[in-house]
Amino acid sequence: MTEPLKFKAPWMVAVWPGMGHIAINAGFYLAAKLGMRNFASCAPWGLWEVEHVEVERGIVQPARLPRNRLFSWRDPLEQHDLVLSIGEAQLPTGKQAYCKALVRLAKEFGVERVFTFAAMATQMHPEQDSRVFVAATDQATLDEMMWLENLHVMEEGRISGMNGVFLGVVAEAGLHGACLLGEMPHVFAHLPFPGGSLAVLKAFTRLMGLNLDLNELMWQAEDLGRHLKEMFPREEEAQPKPAEPAEEEGGELEHPEPPKLSPADEQRIEELFRQAQQDRSKAYELKRELDRLDVFREYEDRFLDLFQKPET
Image (tube, rainbow, N blue to C red; front, side, top):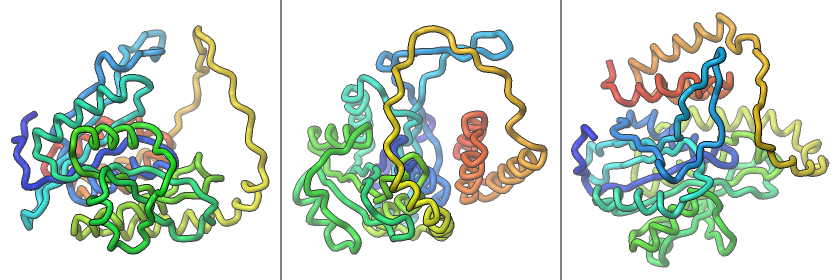
């Protein structure tokens, strides 16, 4: 780590991919709009089993473990700095051990509050505003948050995946924290739902006293809500698909595909990279475009380099 590990009364947010991309998109939005710096990364060595390797033009590529990246933001008002942890993937095993390592890091940073984000699938209509549900590590932390409008206590249930497991380890370690769950329609659980990310960030920024521009996320949520409105009746009537059979061991031949990107797409991406280098708040628009074109993995390292360099 090249950046000093001293922060002013820091809060921490930790996110991993999950339903509706609610947590991960909220994390990247924070990083982009606050101009956060990527100051460290780590991979879960010994906790992740490599199950396949990629082959390109006949050459086996070295396996790369998914990484956890740490971002920082210094509060100009010197109230609470922010440390953001973004994980590339959910760990299939070793969740407890990895979360304990992350909690140790949080303690080294002097973190005062820990937050995770997640999705809450309900019967909501896609054009409705998403509610935010909360589960806290202790009653005092929960009580401190209940002044927020649109915040509903998660009375019972479970929070699956790293976004939930990490908060459990936080509670065991005696730290204070909470999980903010953004509501989304259960029939669209397979699609990104920016309305849930928007609701979570509205709650979090009010709790932290952050002045964050949420307009881009709001416009994206409204636009998607109008499109999903037309699909909603059909999706509700659709029967659940049978579970897919488990994968068998062996090789999987991937037939060559035509290039995914048109010259216009490539030009658009390069222009967004140029804009994001000059104004890091544009990075979220760039990520949204890479996700839309399904090429984020190809540009991931270059995208994250934006958060390691000072703005020009």
